Length: 462
Image 1 (cartoon, rainbow, N blue to C red):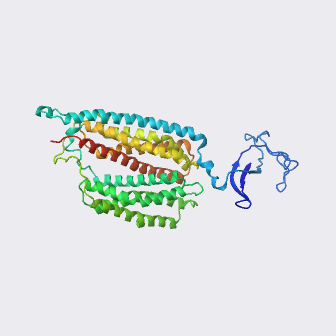
Image 2: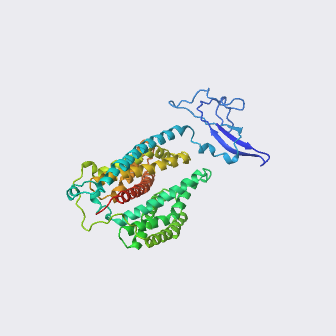
Image 3: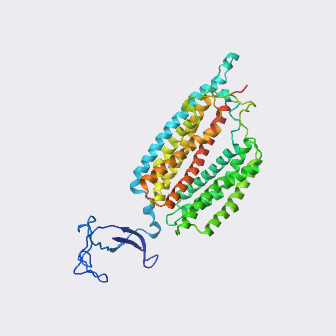
């Protein structure tokens, strides 16, 4: 049964406007008089004098027989104006409690991490700084332990500095895109009435955020003591967008081969290339040029010419163990919201609760920053100064859990049997996980960068 709702307002427009509809399914074993006439059926269970109700016998499905399909239409006047017809989708309704539970759960994680960071900053660090700044004898200096001992190596440039700077620049680009997108969404500019509006806005915002990507990447690369700015600029503008476009193009070839109407036409692919090379690449280059012309970021301490030997580390401070442990909490903070977003993408459900999403993103930022600072402090206390990549991977490893969850979601929630459908799912979820890795890794890196600079600027270095 289709219930079509319409709104009338003679003072503003003539006639009526359809503002909604309701579909109510029935299962009825229909009966008719005499022999079946397809041109003029005479049903006794559904006619002008008798409407279909739920009290009628249901159609059995465990025995052979004919099935008769019918429908009826009911017109219903509504007070909902034309401009508010999409409000039913913008209100989350019965899912409110689940979203609030997710946010409260995430806030508990943030409060726990905030307590640990506060304890480190206010108690342990204050004691350390006070002890390190006291006048010490030569014997006491030799017996020093802790994070002060690595002050001559803590700002030593990392391995693969160009890759780290490019990753951070791209992460800033993704973060700037998401922040701007959230502002537009919260202000109501993204409506379900405009199909594809969200994806179009994401694409355009990403393209125009090429400037901060080039700027941040160039400043970090220059801080690491490198001068090949052209290579850095090229990789910032090409590495992540090229990976996304290449995967998208290969998947689209399979969709073309299947003859699907969902295949992206050649004109749209060419338009994407124009946006990439005509807007994103130049903006990234301008940002990199500006960043390289800025003064080099001065660190609180200089690094020694001869690297300090790192003492044997306990098992729990191993790089693989600490990074995998660090990624659990950021993913746990957004887990429930990820479920709703994946359901909207792959199960065609509506997701427009941007208020909840904005809160969860803020919680994600806080969680990534705090877990990275905590792990970095423990690492420096163990006299391991290789924190540059570790800080990026600690929070970025949450992307691994996201991809593993997408595999479980595919097995338990989806019913895709064709190869092309499975390929589309896993390639797209891989790109989502890579984007999540760059975003969370960048948050953790800059939080740790601030933390390390802060603590080493507070102590006296002889």
